[in-house]
Image (cartoon, rainbow, N blue to C red; front, side, top):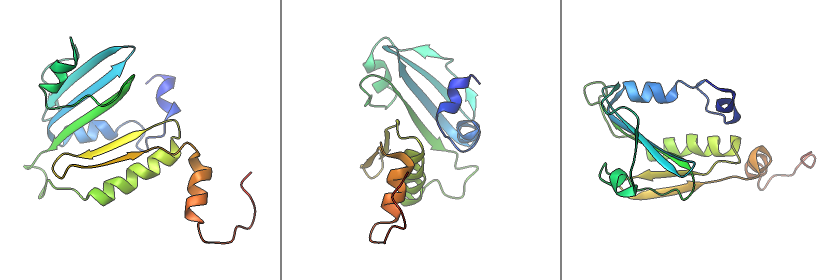
Length: 148
């Protein structure tokens, strides 16, 4: 890990994506950075493509991923392994709640959560960070003091 990793709060000390990958039938990771698009494909946790640089957006779209970030960002698309999980359907609300928490902890981050099965999409961005979270949680309640 380089020191830049810890500029964002992830919650699992950097192992979260590794766990998702290990428990997925297939995982595709796409990163856009410095004007270039990189991607890697994994099956059952094993890299099958090696890190590649896409020649253009159409190469990524052939993987079933629509590039939705203008300058930079990351997209993770995964398919849970039905041999591991009893059900491969997840609660949208549970995942949305966790991502909402992360968006408050990382005010510089915009999270787009898309459920391709239902078409539901939420964009989470909380520039006010923890102060915004406290204000949200205390709506309709009398404040003992103003935030510092």
